[in-house]
Length: 309
Image 1 (tube, helix red, strand yellow):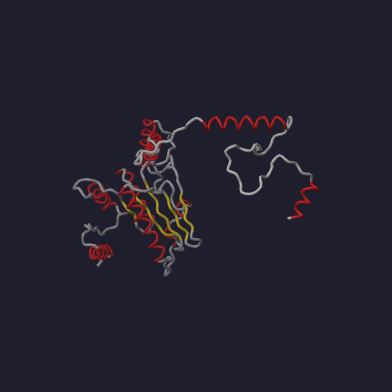
Image 2: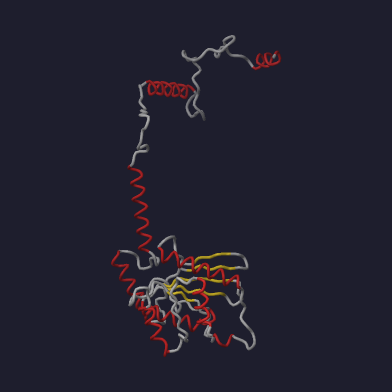
């Protein structure tokens, strides 16, 4: 049994409600390329409709390049995922033709350096593999797939994870205008014309329309909240009214403070408002002898009184 058939049987056993269509062939060969294109173009849930999303879970550069070429040609959104050679870091990447870099825009460093990927493999040596890292990248891929398909949250264009230091990093990049894939360049030109028709900069983020719509919605909600009364319901019919006395009292206090400030002299200003020393007529009386607030004492007299206490 091939690993494709084994995977299909295992997944069907786990969830028999999922429809699985298995194709066991090498997608990098030209003899299978047209069939591979047709399944992306017409393999959706509705007969004859394209698929909603392509997930790349392959383990070599050639297969990724084949998926990249097919999705650029069909203008199909897809997710690429991968694990580093030391198996301690992983990443997922959204590839939206014309909006984000395609896989050929930003190839891996080894490939960009002109080296053949096959020459890196040594006889009898297997690449590092950690099930924990594989599980992490699978979880991140599925989580962003759900957000994309169900239209909630924010889908990142590139998310990386480094297990050595438990670090996550996000990167927003633009497509390479000189990409070697002519389909990628064509999608970029279509995107530029679309942005110009919308009056948006040509270097806008890949989800510029969604960001603009979200900003408008937030502005409308803020305006609606500001236009509503603070208390729409008044169950107990409470009303707040002014009898005019509070304003007059405040004006008198302000005038008193201004008079006291002027008496300090030019250039001198108190940090706090000077309290009115005059005794209010309506102030409650204190039990015991009345204390005079106008009587002045010298420092020696005050010290003598303190000693008597």
